[in-house]
Length: 150
Image 1 (cartoon, rainbow, N blue to C red):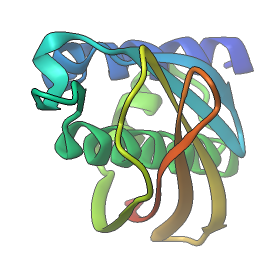
Image 2: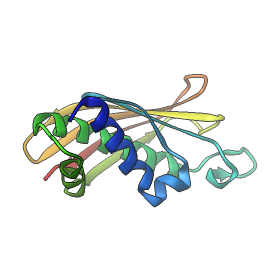
Image 3: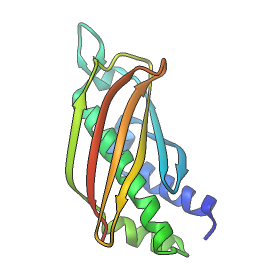
Image 4: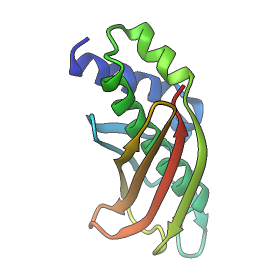
């Protein structure tokens, strides 16, 4: 499979997850060691009505997703995935072991971008670092995720 085919397969899997549809997450960038997803603020995502800021659960779920997809990208490269079926197989064996989120500022904004970076990928476990910014590049939250990879 080409990089573009793998990228599209992962984006498709990401789009089919019902909770990601609720948030409105879209994959913006998919590289082996760098993944970026984005979503737009909507009334359904508000956690503090008077201040109209993003719900902490949405922040956490988005960081978890981008961390997992970042780990997935590295694992697929290392395993030399060659078909869409193999992408699905690798994805089906993934799971979050640990997730730490540090909320740095209120989630104010119109558009949010979450970026993931690989810290380490081993045979069975991957560790990633994630950040969430708004459209003016204000850092809202950071996270570290540990994922079982098979």
